[in-house]
Length: 524
Ligand code: GLA
Image 1 (cartoon, rainbow, N blue to C red):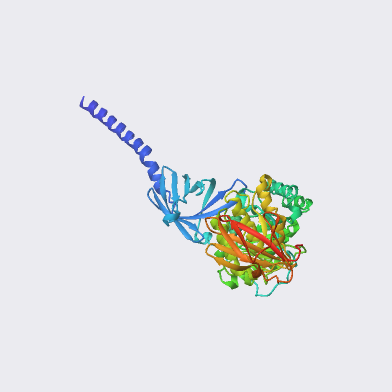
Image 2 (image 1 turned 90 degrees about the horizontal axis):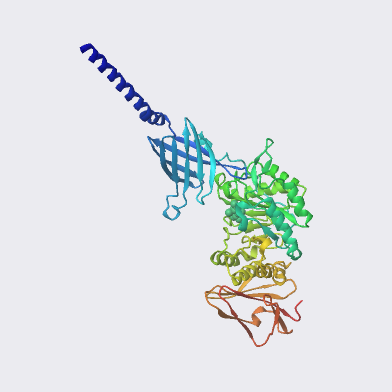
């Protein structure tokens, strides 16, 4: 009996031991296994966009048990990142440390299997991308090595755009969504609306057309743009010209493949596709070069030289946001126009600030070489008709490029009446391109004027204030001489204005404009 009991006890003890061992396996082993997973180190998170392009992003992780901390590596340093690894599941959030930006979170969710980390990344705007993630090291996160820049020299003038370029650009309305079809549609609408007859001829594709490079290093377009040459042929068949976009850095502002280290090769590809205009946007070049005048001028000269080696006239649009005063050297690097400011947005405050800040540098614009205060927002819906008329009047008085930034397929009559005001377009396109000057500035009122090639004068009465206000000027201020009778025309009302007395006074609506053309003798 004793033996029997001992046996039973031993059996029970064995059972308990086996049960405990099994329990340990179920409960503890995963913990042990994941405790063995160490995600610490540098990772390349390769975001896969629906257009086929891959965007490498880097994170540095430090794992302590189930706790993950680290940095989302960005161009200007990094954002703190934190999260967990539990039962093979990863959840991490990165956001800028600065409180104002803290809501701009990137969320990483995924799983770890051994050393394979598979993530889905939700960008601050909520778009989610699959992102195979691979181990890398610090070097792997760094931009490529700096390549030499050419010694400074002045490139010849390419003879293009003797009046400010006119056309359309995809960025303001379509941003990263632009496709081949949109571009074809815009070409169609440019012609059917009558805009092309007024001189709007460039159909410019901005950022997000790029895929990567083929085995020979040639830049390729993503699945939104299946055949660039065919697209260029289509735009040309409409009697229009086509523009494209790249950056002197390794990636564009939207993180797509760019021209760094392939300057001649890309210039050749663009020429072979039939490109007529290129916007070259600094962006990631800042991770390689400094923002010194020497470097910025050097990177633009390098591509300017590459373009001039092609047997094709290509308008060269510099985009470095005015940081190094490109109005002073843009011509030397072969530039036809240069952005003078940061990005415009479809709001009064943005347009007003950019537009009126241009008066200080108006004297740098001249035929073939233009200050570019950014594309038009007319028709995009964020401003009133008065504000859009101010936008059009001001850009025209400044001889700025007129690149519509709206959807040309769905323009209202009001939008058409603004973009297609031939009398205002004629101011923009005046061949003399003299700088606009301030006739008077009183509080929120600016009276601007500029003389035109035919000797007439354009006067803009701008009300930047929040209420309608009376604005006047003396006819004699226009220095048109006293011998001939003055004739004046209101370019928005499309009607003649009676010239009588010494002064002209108009009630200008809030954020609005009255634009007159005045001549001694008959207006031509
Ligand atoms: C920069 C430019 C914009 C536009 C975007 C595209 O912000 O200033 O005009 O080209 O890049 O990413």
